[in-house]
Length: 207
Length: 342
Image 1 (cartoon, rainbow over the protein chains, first blue to last red):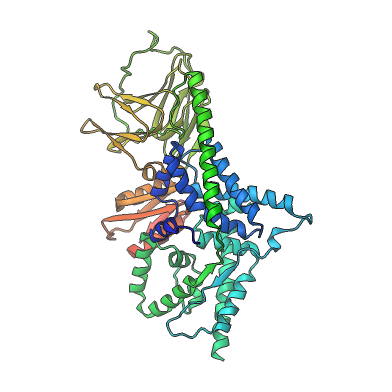
Image 2 (tube, rainbow over the protein chains, first blue to last red):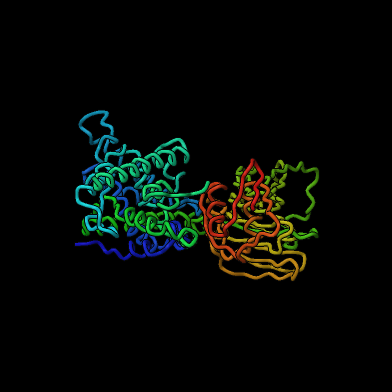
């Protein structure tokens, strides 16, 4: 049973970054105490948070609890929040903190580094079609493996930047990295690796 | 930095391209359409690179619908409980509480004359003797946030200043501003907070508001997010603002109009958003000068489109200029605080 994708399509059809004026209006309405606005924010972000959380752990209950707690915190802190805050960033940062804390508690083995988990998988669309149809299954697989072999931090940055459309500064804050420049550099490295893989995949085809 | 891709991979390392392929917006659409027009021999390459990028997807996981709905129910229930608790508290305490969000008051523009406060004072004495006044200001490209003696929070945008007494009097908290200032005023019913900006006087009772009052600008504005403010000047203009309303005072015409406002446009400066909406190009460069604290000189004879629309969030000057430069077809250099457009 698919969750209603209505909110998702609304956002992806708009040619606007997430923090659009419409979103700011929604945020204002929520801060004013509008229940419908709160529900809308939930519908938009809960699935994203779930997906994001799923990259850190397979424990569904943990993730769901973390989502609920995140929104509880949002309601608690409503009075302290103001317009200057980014909806998305607040939710992601709070969720990440809550989830990682509860994962740590759950982990049987101490010191398990979540970076080592196979999080932030990127896949190539199986229906991918290129103009001159040169891509074979083998090549696609090769490309996919390269991307997924990127260091987890780079993969997370690629995901947050290109799939979640987050700003560098926000990503830095979210992931506890030094600053926006650090994020950019890591992103560039990731892109370069992917570009080289692409080049290699092409050569494999030609010969 | 000319962008000269030879193969698809080269597109991949252009972050602006990747951003456009996955999250197009008006600005980047225009940029890349114009780039394609200028590089027709690379169009096929571009299309292929775009397709490759669009074929990448994060592996998606979905929550089951029942859980999704149940959590929402819990959240809404919790929200009710929290709201009820705070409302009861308020009733018992006999406060009138404004909406949760902070209030932004914006006062735009400064008038030449000095206008006096017209609303009745609780005291007879209006003149506060032997006040030591303190001034804080920002230059072009800088912002400042700090607290006033009463704990009220003040945020200054570029080229702005605020003057206030070292010690606030018991009956009146008075400040004077120029430029764009955001206030979050501590509630003190016994001592109303008064802001003077150009000819406008704004009386405030524990709210946050944004004031925009720059000399040389035709309008002064005051925008309120929560709470209540009363605005007046010596010409007998008197307005009260409700949350999410703003007034706009046209200095030459001496006319004040009230309207709802666009928070993104007006408050963008606080979240680091530069926002142009059909803005004439002269204003675009002026805004960039102020925002980044630079001087922009344009080679005479250059022509630009009439107006510009674009939105940049927390981007550095080089990125913003690159974006505009490609769509307008100019080049630029940045050397320290000097920008040359040619």
